[in-house]
Image (cartoon, rainbow, N blue to C red; front, side):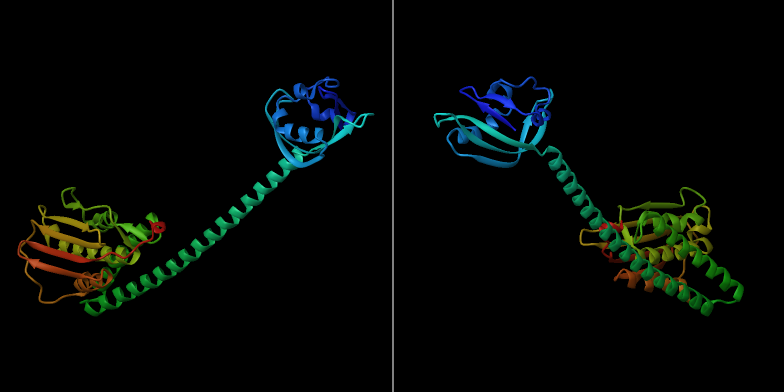
Length: 327
């Protein structure tokens, strides 16, 4: 405790008050306004109240002071009470005070730790929810992949001329499917770019940098659409290598795609420089996959045109919506 006495409110204090002074020593006999000049304006209302005969009490009052030579945010709980002289008039002020700076700092640290813990819990819950979504998507993709493999095997066996031919065709198609899966796994969980899909599918058939010319915007496809388009490009490239533009040194393929603002999507494969083309008398599983399956996946129309100067495959459909998180 301390008290201030007289017209200049000279300070007197006990030993327990010394730590509160910091470097403001010696303080006994110093005027209140001079000794505590850095906080005088903050405590002046309490001083006036006590000098008017009205005691005050305040708890955890924040005061920025320079008692140790630097600005320091401190907190104080104190009471100012009037002191009367022999004549019964107010001659000074008694200050009973406790510094609560450490307690307030500890409380602030605890509140921050609590806020950090709540944020950590929120992030963990969000992470767990994302894991659930990923697991559901992976399970869905696995079912789709198994269904596609089953269809490849059964349809290829049905149209094959021999078991050895069927084995070779099944192996090539499943390898193409695996490459598409690797592409999806390497880029994101549920989306892949058209350019990456096309490049991966034609890579085994590209023996010259002029063989394939690709042009199109940066477009993402959902997992199902990516797998379907990858398989279609694989079938087109395989047939072009056996019978079409890629069977001759000067043959080439132009691949173009586009996407409008309403999520409509178009894809074109055009061969040129190959042998004359005539429409086959029999359509195999590859052609059916390229047309029917892709049409269903893109909710549109896909068609192979056997033009004399080269095969043309055109697709017009809609893109599946892909959440930003998936890209």
